[in-house]
Amino acid sequence: MKRKLFFPIIITFSTIVVVAAFFWGLYVYVTDRNFQTTDHALKNVIELQASAIYNGYFAWTTLYDTVLQGDFAKVAELVEDIKENFPLVDSLEFERGLPPDERYAISLDGELLRIEYSIQNDDGTATVPDMFAVAIIQVQKLLEIVSPHAFKVDIAHGRKASYGIPISTSVGFFNPTNIVAIALVSTLIAWLILQRYARRNEFFFDIRGLESIIYLFEQTEKFSASHSRNVAIFALFIGKKLDFKGKRLRNLYVAALLHDIGKIGVPTSIVVKTGKLDAKEYAQMKQHPVISARILRGFREFEHLGNIVLHHHEREDGSGYPDGLRGEEIPLESKIIAVVDVFEALVGERPYRNPIHPMSAFEKMRQMPLDQRIVGILIDHYEELRTFKAPRWVLSYSPWIINAKGSSMWFQ
Ligand SMILES: [Fe+2]
Image (tube, rainbow, N blue to C red; front, side, top):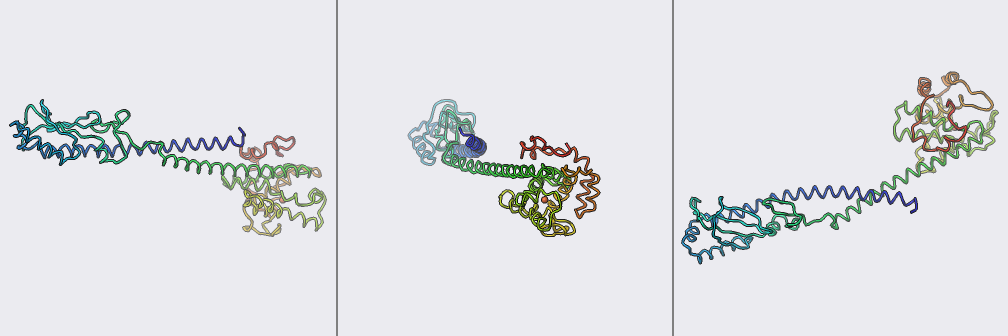
């Protein structure tokens, strides 16, 4: 099987299993609730039916006397009368034997309900001693009254309801409604998961691709390999100190990582020039944040980072570029990148000068029009920064760069 298909198939299959399990749980719950309700109704109907027949006929001195007198022609007439008034009664017969202890006794015989009646006078003080009446009712008929189409008598697998009546639901789990619902819900969930996965993948590979471009570009510059990566780690550190979390922290990291990607749009002779840039060259160099923003805006996943990279060379007093923004006009993320960008440039190794000691760098930075609150955070937590370990999700972007020779962070 192609690897490409493996993941979607596993996700779809797992989703179906989870959704089906959820539906099964729901089905069991609903069926149980229905069972309780049906059982309650069934019991009431049986009790009502039994007591109505008793009160109407078997607590009746006329019938009591007729039976004692042995006038069975008249008894037969009364039986017909009972069957007519109680259509649920299938048959009603008189049997010789001891009457039940109570007014009537209900028992189950297969799928039939058997109600044995004592034959008593009006006030129930006298009972025919050696005879009783038996009314037979089909339980299924009662079930159809209390719960049409939902339950059926099921001797083999039914759950015991009142009087031991075994009933089971007529609506199986694998009915068309459930199957369609499971299929629809599973498809929707699997689609959402796969969409999210595809977006994450896209994000991951876009970063990896752009990061690789920057890395290779910086390698050709010869003097600042891994500058962007160091800036990104420092920015992440400051972001954490400023309580950035989740997406905001990740955005800061990615923006810092890609802030200088626009340099690939500036002639290499200008980028690698070690001497002072003339006005024309400087004007071209100042275009790199604009190009960075343009590149990032070309990717759906990074569009929103465009503004951050656009302003990473702005300064608090408006002396920066490209828009000369001041103070609060500059996005906080851009200010962070500006501070750590300057710091990395000062303390990083360059072939044409020795790295500046961090303490000297801090002194210089205190005089620069940078956000001094962020500079202060950097100075206060400098020792912690030296041992700061980036979280795993950061390292996952470009493991091959981390492992590449000579590309480790400057202080390691
Ligand atoms: Fe830059």
